[in-house]
Length: 322
Image (cartoon, rainbow, N blue to C red):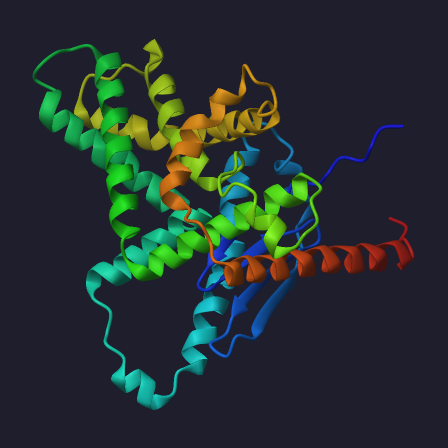
């Protein structure tokens, strides 16, 4: 008799905490300043047409990202509100106002680890490298495939520099540590390990099924798609319109590639397909402290409990004839 398939869980780091998405509910755990944990528990309610779209190949990626962005916002706001509520008037008055770089870095760091505002970020990282490449190389040669390759290289370079720089700020560094804690918990669960802090810390902070991996795949996939002969362009305006219109296509294909790399990660000859995403995670995750793993475990365990509770309620509810 075959063993039941282990559900695929995902999550995202928030300010001083971690959110996990279950089959029936999303749960966030945040560490308060007094070391107690605060929880946000949101049962999943999805319309039937959304559930249907999430099963359609090449379309489900875009739907999943939009859905994650919308739901993730509530959990990010929850974590931010916890600290706003705990600050006394004296602390707020004495607290040094963070500079533009620190605020900007924190916002973009959250976007990286949770795919929050991913579509806006994708638009930015699609158009800026394109304009830079066109400005530097458009007059040197006419091979549009080579132009696409250089655009992809510039895009990767900008992405790496930006993540590295914002990762130097203390708030984003802690965010990246919670990102690592999230990955460790998922990896330990998928390996069937005892879910304790010491055991979880033994696992890698890198994971094939991650938003960071998805970002790299969109760059690689984009270069391939843009290089099809039918997408050859003859002006900067045509190139711009083409890039914007192809964003949903690139996202849809990249999502399928991400699912493929995760499904073949245990096959030695194919596991290398996910390496580019794992390499980027060396920047977007940091080794977490034990107390961070504790928060991540608390969130994950509560998510599992709530999944069971809500599933039991569904079973006991009488069916309604259509």
